[in-house]
Image (cartoon, rainbow, N blue to C red; front, side, top):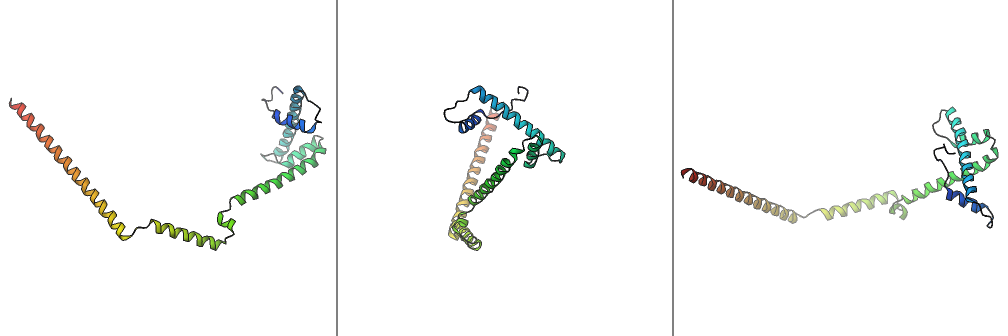
Length: 184
């Protein structure tokens, strides 16, 4: 098992399984648990390898439950097949239930309240209308907003004009200083 790239089963999980199936007064040594993990890992690899061969022969890239069952029968473990079939069926039932539970969680409040599709559409249109009413401005508000915008533009224009005048004044002063220096 050293060269198997350290493929193994979770030790804590296997210890719990052993504890659940053994009488309460029985203790299992750590070395025994390690040996069981090694045996289980080897068994799984053997079944997986054989199932992979069946999948490959059928041109499949995925090992399906049927491939595992064929592998068990081929390797002489046919006594496990009925239990595996029961477990597989139970898994499919559980998966369906989980899928249905997820679907019920996705239902909207309107679905859960029992509203028809037409009632849901009407409710949606009412909510859109209320949102539009809140966002729309009156003509007075629009005029006030336009006036405030124009005032800001005018203030900005005055500010730019003052900056240009200050710049021109500074340039004139520099020019005068240069002329005075040249005269001296």
